[in-house]
Image (cartoon, rainbow, N blue to C red; front, side, top):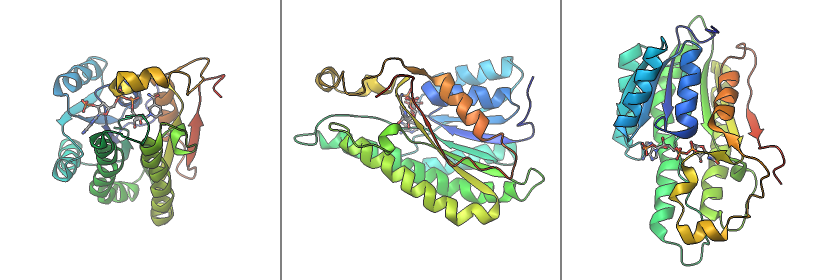
Length: 252
Ligand SMILES: NC(=O)c1ccc[n+]([C@@H]2O[C@H](COP(=O)([O-])OP(=O)(O)OC[C@H]3O[C@@H](n4cnc5c(N)ncnc54)[C@H](OP(=O)(O)O)[C@@H]3O)[C@@H](O)[C@H]2O)c1
């Protein structure tokens, strides 16, 4: 078994489904102790049980990271469990698409609260621990921000989702410049369409009208992105992979 991450600890937000759950499994398989963060505790418990059955180490932290205190506490709990934090995967996100005109504004609030503020709160709380871990023998620590192709390309009907994901790209680059001298790497992952629960939260009338927006011939699986993240965080410490776009083959 590949144990490139033995002795490390990782926190993954949005670990109760989709890309986050697959990433937690992938990092645990490579030897990381993983802190699983999301709101649905039952899902997290099941995943933790699976990881432990497969010989890994996992802890469960039920938290709503749009609440600043809960995000900070999630990081504190992970550090208490494992004594360190080497990898933060900022993955939790929501995609509520639709036209800007007459949009239910609470959908915008939810996207900004999770995709932007949740990521900021978690990063802020984790950064001192990542900087400390990077001083250790591994000589590196990682922040992986899960953005989207929608963080590079604006499309009609994606306005506020585009806004949040473009924002993550700008924040990631600024943070990279700030911490690069101190051995913390910052990576931005930009997936195209992945088969997860993400689109199930879109209003049905919007979902129907946007069916052809992504024009994708095939679809990615959560494991495809998890493998990419696993690759990024196992590069030698002198290599930093800053930005990766992963599209399903045949996408426009
Ligand atoms: N699927 C795609 O096509 C695609 C493409 C590009 C980028 N992405 C990005 O990939 C990331 C993961 O999405 P996914 O596709 O894996 O979707 P998903 O299956 O819906 O996963 C979203 C995760 O976020 C968690 N979450 C939601 N609200 C939360 C909150 N307030 N606090 C903590 N966790 C919360 C959910 O768990 P709980 O409900 O249990 O809290 C869930 O684990 C997102 O940032 C998304 O924008 C996805």
